[in-house]
Picture (cartoon, rainbow, N blue to C red):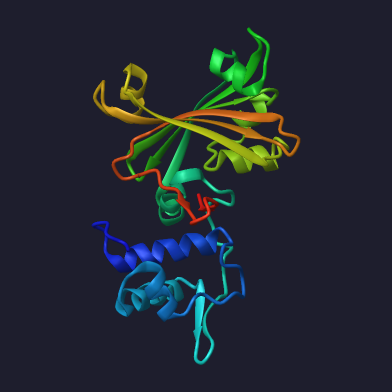
Length: 245
């Protein structure tokens, strides 16, 4: 049962949208019937039909008489790699996001970075600092670390909206597994400056380590998020398996 303040049809729409985008419902696959969705979401038929109407308007599904709702498009512009617990907002707000590369440099890896990338103490890593804004509101401050990324290559790329896609396509890194740790922190001087909040303001910190198929770390990211409009959400099925990120 959906009991969150947001309207029921929007909640149903977002869930179906994310499942289509993540290929949970694949191209050409039928969605559950309206009756089945009533059971799944615990709502009446009206919000189900409103959500399906919006999916059809956005070109994701086709409602075929006698057949049902069929996925006809799932390759939308936007993030091509899952974005953790912020995926629903990324999918909905991708067109209004912008990202500024603040700095690219070689640095001595801090303790958590060295541990995440399995580096020896005092080893160098490439650090990329980026600020992502939702329209005019700075929302994400990200610090990406790589073992051997060429500084000039990153600088020449200009503003990189989707870093992991850039790392995959340009830096040649493979992403197969991800581990994230989440904690609440208070904004220090740096976070206060970049995210435009008062010092001491509550901020979500995520430390993420990405691994290739051989489980070798290829990227370490420490990032901070203003979560007023960007809640971290993850859904699991009844067996504990992750249904969407």
